[in-house]
Length: 248
Length: 262
Image 1 (cartoon, rainbow over the protein chains, first blue to last red):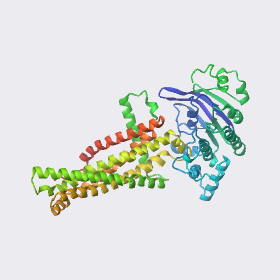
Image 2: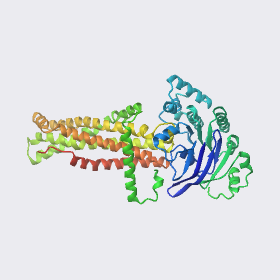
Image 3: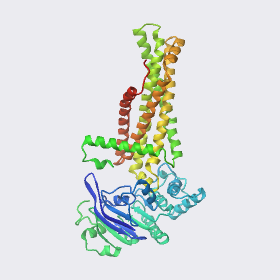
């Protein structure tokens, strides 16, 4: 479904992605792990055209997307939902308006239907009766869940999760893990998850890919990753300060 | 392109690069003026923010601008031509205010009040990924953020300027009347020599200043990076760049817009 070929991206002379290759199949959940600042967020922003590559190709269902016009990207983005690291809720809109934002632009619903979907989406992430609150009235964890409700409200085919469990207590984090699994089972959603949380990664991933120095250095099922002999991956998944990764 | 992409570019080239970025933003914004869907609600909000909420500060600056212009014109005529000639200052006050002083004062006040707020608001949205979220949720940030602000700015700046003209001229008259100038002669001269084009050319300037303020404010906001400090920098830059642009543009517009001196 998604094929990333030899992707390169630099910022101010610093190479962030350096020939990255990754294939993601339809309905699969791929977890991308890697150090902070290794380019994980940059990678997923390429998929929705927020960042354009310096070199390389990205295919979605066989269509190369890197050179699409802004109008074509608009059509493509309907297929994506994204949960941002800091939730990225619109400060000036209520929770309900935030969740309805994508619905209003991507689908044609009556006001009543829209409100029903907003309530259902919020209920899915364990929130009820918060539609009229403003984002600044929510805790960090609640913001994250509203962000997730917004991402799933218009039922996208592909969901990109940028650190879904960061800033949430372990119980809520596990509930979000369950939700990611549920989305996959019920709707056949393809998910790309960026996380540092290995507990989450092992639970939700069909495959785990490790991003290091701009490349995917290892990928495999959670079991394969756990047993890998790659010292860099071992150091990262066990959270050890000593090892081949020197920059931290 | 983000600012971090520019670190290796020499500063003189960076100037042209930034000029190009502003040009692209301007072209895209003007093109989107005519493309649906329009963000009507946001546009109305901006009309209120830029227009209605700027009224107190415009009233104050126009009033004192008119008073001080009235004062200096009174002194000038009294000193160089003699007592009784002050009534001829009416057209000069009105001409100076409508063509130059009020458009500039309104432009600078709106830059400080609204241009900086645009940069801060959009800058905060950018660093908290709200601008990226707009993309993913099917809203073009240019149409959602830049177009309503720019449209409202180019509509409200001329309105504020016209309002400022009235306040300024009234206050210039008020000062002269207070100093005992012949009121009938003052008004007759003003109405005789002040032409509609003088007022219109001031409004054209205000429209262009409105465009400059909104585009620079939005451009700085959309390029903000580096957390709260970056937003602060974007805000400061907006005020400095827009203010200087207004003063420079004002001179060239004064040269370009025809004035009836026959």
